[in-house]
Amino acid sequence: MRYRYAVEADAPALAGLFAANHHDALTEEQRAGQGFVQGAFGAETLRGMARDRELLVADAGQGRIAGLLALSVARDMGDPPAAVLGLLHAQDGLDWQGRPLGGVPWLLYGPVVVDAAFRGHGVARGLFGTALDAAVGRAELLVAFIEAGNAPSWKVHVDAFGMTPLGEYVVAGRTYTAVAVAVPAAP
Image (cartoon, rainbow, N blue to C red; front, side):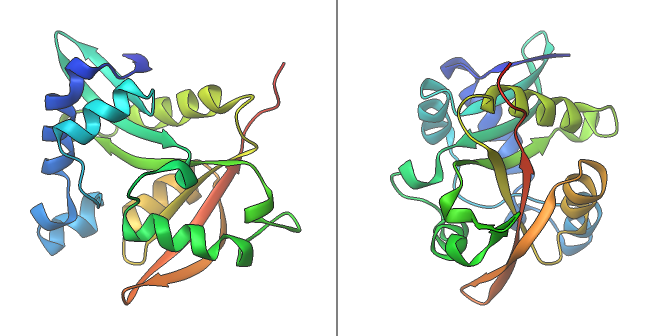
């Protein structure tokens, strides 16, 4: 597996991967078993994110994308999804080691999606490590949000990867937990 920044030509494959794992495309049972992603990420949006070096991919070769992970500056998003906007509004009430999140340089981690055929093979962990490496010198933290009820995402990010819960916030009646992990110091 090769981990790299996405290029514009990856956009159609990324859009397909995202659409297949979107909250609204899955049954309640599927969401409970595999997790889900949210937001509107069509090919044009993903092409722009690739151009801006905001997407990491797990490249399985032969044109097959095994996974994707967005890594961006949330405050610089032109039209952030409601959950990201909620996180930005909540950040001064969320605590990272005694400091409000709003006072710590951070990058938004996610969404992250792994193709069903590659789950359980370390792809998410590879993307996580690549994101940490990509954030060195750019931020102190990677911050994600997990919607209440997305137990698979919690299991991966908090239980397996060690991300720290910072607190909850609510957007349009939906509850999210912000989670964070420290970025390694630059060598």
